Length: 339
Image 1 (cartoon, rainbow, N blue to C red):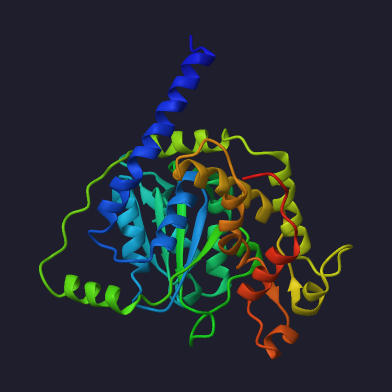
Image 2: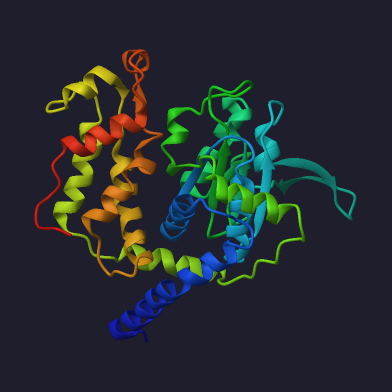
């Protein structure tokens, strides 16, 4: 019979495993990835918290390589789906086919699609029309796929890590708001500094990179999820996260005037939920057993940037989503005496 003491000791072991493994993770990733430290940290935080991620950046910034390397480190079953304009929902989820049995009868048999894996790389997700993009909605929210009225559970842990090129590029389809809201973070990858680019070019044009070693198992990841949710957080910090999300919605009582001027749609309830959950994972990742104000503020940008839709006035004035979030952080006062 498991006692509370046994549970506590098991959780402490997981916490220590997380603290001690950060350096090893960075070492393994450095075999394939140069720079992008902030993006890597945010991606790992989402993995520890059990959230899906959207990676946005121009072609050639190692988005696909980063996701594949993360899957190798955590020893998770990996599937890559290349999204194209002619991709159909059944190409992702699977389909029923008619097959003949050994006794001469025929029956419908469900053939699983590539979504039945632990880590799904939805590569260039905005290259396919909304109908096919929506095929991921049930999987991301419910961790299951429904075909012909039958529900098929997905393997756990389950992550969708989607990459997209900037929306304004030719041949892309903006993701619907309902799907964007199911991504915990929108992680932005920018061009590397010159020294890092030199390192990338040198590394990729010489000998083959070293093999990335697996440091964890799928069961480890599931234990991380349980421990992250038990990390304590002060009610004032939860309220601060809720206030930040609420203040981003135009037309509400107490909304800052610049939000009414610049924003046409603000962050919903999931924004505050993911902000708190991500902050708990970040606290453990930083070696702390409680959430601080720094954790919350560090994750506002990746949590909000795909949930705030700026209006025509903001575009005309050259105001970006990042500017809106910065001004929101300046306007909403954080709780005092919390660090």
